[in-house]
Amino acid sequence: MARVEKNAGLESRLEDVKGEMVQEVRRRTRPRRPWLTCSLLLLVVLVGLGVWIAWMVAGTGLIHVPVFTSLAYEAPAPTRTVTPGVPVETVLSETFTSTLTRRLYEGGGALANTAVEASLTEASVTSSLRTFLEKAGMTWIDVSGVQIAVDPEVGMELFIPLRLGSQEVGTAGVVTFDLSVQDGNLVVAPTSVRLGSSKVPNFMIATFLKPLLEAELQKLNAAMVGYASISSIEILPRELLLKGELSVVIE
Image: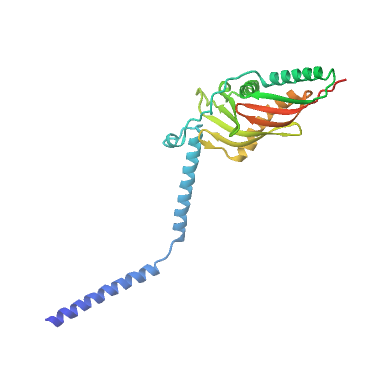
């Protein structure tokens, strides 16, 4: 009896080993389906791209995307509130005129010292910018909320509230940029742009935003023509300091 049980156990183990070998052979010889793997990978990529697009669109605040908007969007706000002041054109005209008069008096009718400085507060720049936008008729912008804050650590911060259809105010754009002087003219260089909570790609900055800022700077440059040539600009807390030379010809 013991011999029979021993042989029966051995046969059982052999059958198990044989079954495992058959399964392994079938697994190895099973036809592969690379198209299925590629399809799954493509599906994962498309789903990921769709989620990313939905997140970015929701983050702008331009369109309400269920679920995504509540997670991705946060209403933008300026660094601080700036109240409009005396327009830039008025400040520059008064500064150049008073400086020229004083220098002529000091020189006995001759203009010996042509150095000039002009201080432009963020309130003045905000006032001129709002006037420019009102005349441009950009109804998709809430002009009453547009402002520019000046900070030496950030540069120039432009805050632009946007109107969306019949909504009072939907989202807003926040732009930071630097100013420099080239050939006596002010030049703008955007450094960062956010629409709602989403960062705007650089190509959109160059295509849409930079021309708008340059159009506003043309007004400042035009206001200085015939008065002075600007050589440098310095960003101070809440104001810009322009330095240059008077270009008035005294006959």
